[in-house]
Image 1 (cartoon, rainbow, N blue to C red):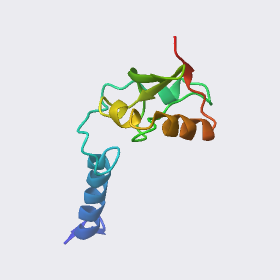
Image 2 (cartoon, one colour):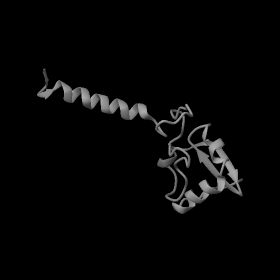
Image 3 (cartoon, one colour):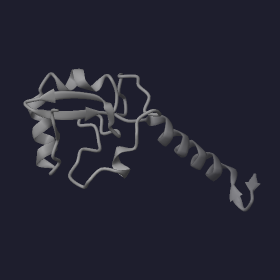
Image 4 (tube, helix red, strand yellow):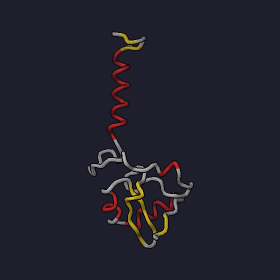
Amino acid sequence: MRIGGASAWVVVATVGAAAGFFLAGCGEGSSLGHDHSAAPNAAATAPANSQTTCPILGGKINKAIFADYQGKRVYFCCAGCPAEFNKDPAKYVKALEDKGIVPDKTP
């Protein structure tokens, strides 16, 4: 079978790959079960050295979800991430700072 010059299996494979990409979500295999649809697009408006991604799952941060550690505010993509952060906050803050990211100061 041919569809517009392309074989049907190519079309099916392409659609399947695209669906898999969009359905995988952040933290592939994550059991946190969360939704990023309401998260503001922090990456579009933040200075270059500001935090724009979650240190746990790597998703876009939602500034309504955060934890404070030693005067530093760390933001997350979803409500499940602060619990993981709190297991070893120094590790995650160090990882951010090692990437040149300067966490906001705790107000």
